[in-house]
Image 1 (cartoon, rainbow, N blue to C red):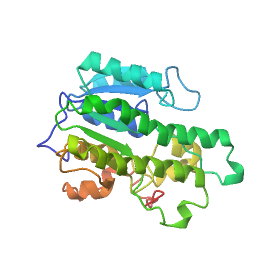
Image 2 (image 1 turned 180 degrees about the vertical axis):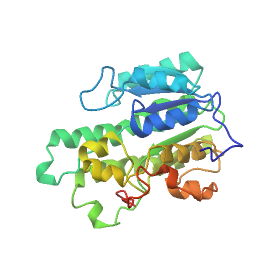
Image 3 (image 1 turned 45 degrees about the vertical axis):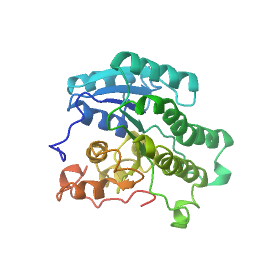
Image 4 (image 1 turned 90 degrees about the vertical axis):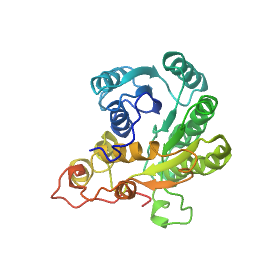
Length: 280
């Protein structure tokens, strides 16, 4: 589906964290179909025993889809690796137009069942990683035409539904930390013309994390495909950066605004009831 036929990401360079699989890869492939350059910034160099894809298989898919790909081993907990990947992107493609903060760690456990090692992992990847990648890309985004930062994090509702907090305080804190980066950076970078927005799915999305952590096949049947987030991301990233910023977007709402009325093609199983995602 193409919801923005009059807009294209052709020739744009996207630095996408966690792009070796799932939503990150779907966003990459959608941009690749326009002829974009994609920096696959992820840490999966060798095949994972439980998760599909590596930076190299993702790069191959991106190039088959019509884009150019640069696979970079990049653990976003490591500033040195972030800056090395950013420098390689600029050297290869001449700059960075778009940053997609997609990489994230999840742990849906209550406090007593959350080791501090897991707490640290979620905060280092989700909040700190988002901040660090944004910081590293700002000088290059400032030189781009229509620069965007898009972060995969939930709408800001600190005092929202308590059920989003009680069962997994550490994870909720880490995800809202990403959203707080959006809130702050949108205002900080407004004068530079750099758009900073958040995007979150209305429903559960069929990814390896859902398969392994959130209920397996039954949950997958009630999910939508990653392509719905990719199409919504494409729409957001195609908007004028000076006017479309500081927003907390929901994929379905974005696509409705773009004129989409039939969402059935995004369903994994059109006969199953959709499961609403956390934080919505």
